[in-house]
Length: 115
Image 1: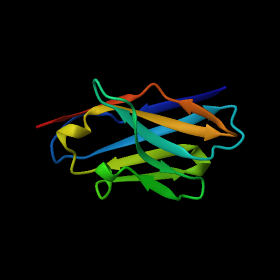
Image 2 (image 1 turned 180 degrees about the horizontal axis):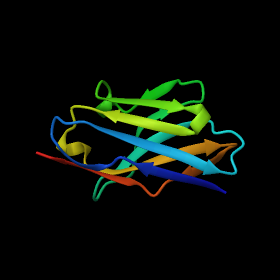
Image 3 (image 1 turned 135 degrees about the vertical axis):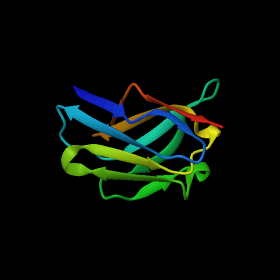
């Protein structure tokens, strides 16, 4: 069984920064892609950024230039550095880890950006 745990959320003013972390643990053979998704109140969950094991990255247009995803394969950990935060970035941020075609989700961490 794989456990995915996010941390680093909180309350920040517009223009501020936060760094999210996510670690996958348990019976892990190989974690391939990892990624961050978010869900704002009343909206569907959306992709924020993904990163492959080889560190190829993909970003939603809304966060390009402000968010940076990175990972430490030895620790099965992925990070999301967020700068220039906007109120519309307010959401629960979820981490997903993919291993052998199976997706494992964390419970999410809340990011609130005040105007």
